[in-house]
Length: 366
Image (tube, rainbow, N blue to C red; front, top):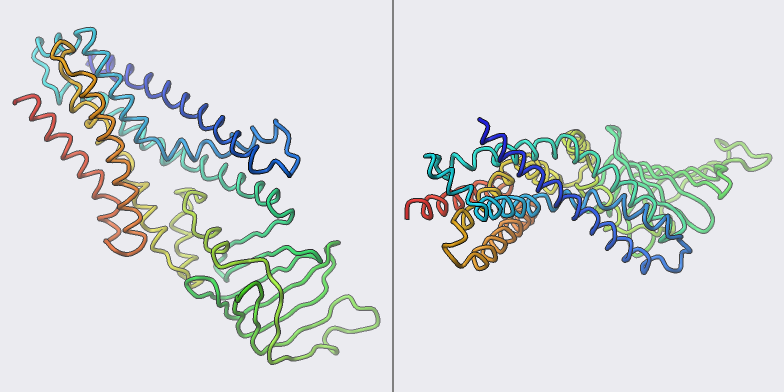
């Protein structure tokens, strides 16, 4: 038991050192990129670093598998260099038993990551996208889903327009049961438009048959001056990609809210495949981290005097990056519907674990 606590503690410290290092690097690189991107927006150094800090948690969270494989690599190299691995072998402890403590620690780190760090990373990413959206356009377009339907808000030179729709098609270019609320820059309601459907084409909403009311016009009662129309065109700076990206980026949604968000997407008519895959991928994270620990140990559990240590380290790093890329590639295939959701999410972690176990047993038993 003492040995397991010792190995677990050493692995945890290496993980924390690497995590801190990756976080600092992420903040510096993001700050440099933001300075160049928003150089015309007169953003100060303090605001730039604040935005970089908001973005960094999400980036580091995505790199957890890479951090874990490097932590396992450093742990095993250190034990090998000090001959502690030789001592554990001499005491009759097998390779798999030696790895039990780092494996359990990695699994617990994965659980903590998805239940605690994931909500933090998604919240800071939402804040980052909201603030950078203001710097890009000067106005803020926002999107939200409720059980009643879909809410959009678009900005313009003359004011804001709030849009409500009961349903939408899969790519958000056609809305059904739509109501437009137009406001001036001062926030005064100007017009309400109700229509059976609205189609987004080349920078404008094309409205079908409907009715509109002029509001806050002196001497006019809105209900008496309401008029019907067969067609109407309203300018818009929204695009289908903007709407889908706002609803469709799973990294901005906490894992605790993902299932209810998927239900709302279903009700509104959007495709939920991407979010279902991402949700399962997040749940499989602890298993992937276990596989990364085993992968990091597969080629580095030999004594340094066995030679070719540098080559083994290089192979281990390449295998870790390959497993990371495999996970992302499987998620892309699952999001497109090319493979089942369960295969996309759980296939890569299980494959990594089995592959690493095979390597360890081969190196252990020859």
